[in-house]
Image (cartoon, rainbow, N blue to C red; front, side):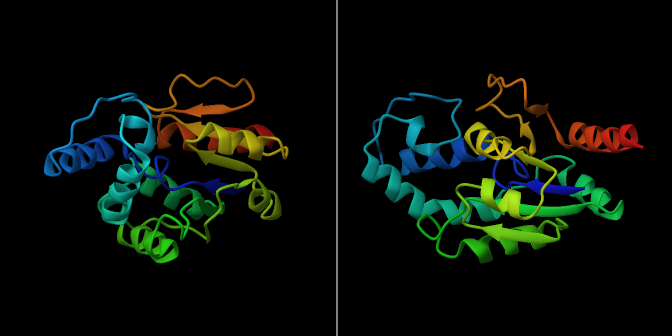
Length: 195
């Protein structure tokens, strides 16, 4: 099986880390703010702050924050086991040069540092549907509903990796995984059912 996997908030669980970095930034800069949405994973939507302040925060902190992010529980073990079983892991991330100094290096360094096994890496794909189609992906796992809806429209099976920001999203055509153990169990059982 060719399995497509996102990085941020799929292989990682960034929500608490994002809140911590945001709170430190606000304190350091003595900013007045109001939380608008504590459940979003988009910094731009968390506070009632001007866009230029959010952009400044992002460029000062994003790469450093993503470098120290920890893998989501069991993600390293599950991807390793899936590759061992003959599955191909294709990582596709939306990280772009518009928002990161060197998104490819940032991604490769993080994957290597955390021992995450994969077969191919594609960086800078804000719309992941075409690359998913081209690489003949059988199942794509991501945390962003809008990404998965576009991929699903190509006839590709999709699964949302649940987090605080997307737990209420419902789509009958999309699988829902609370964690990587559930993802493994589904992949393993679906292949056994095909035999």
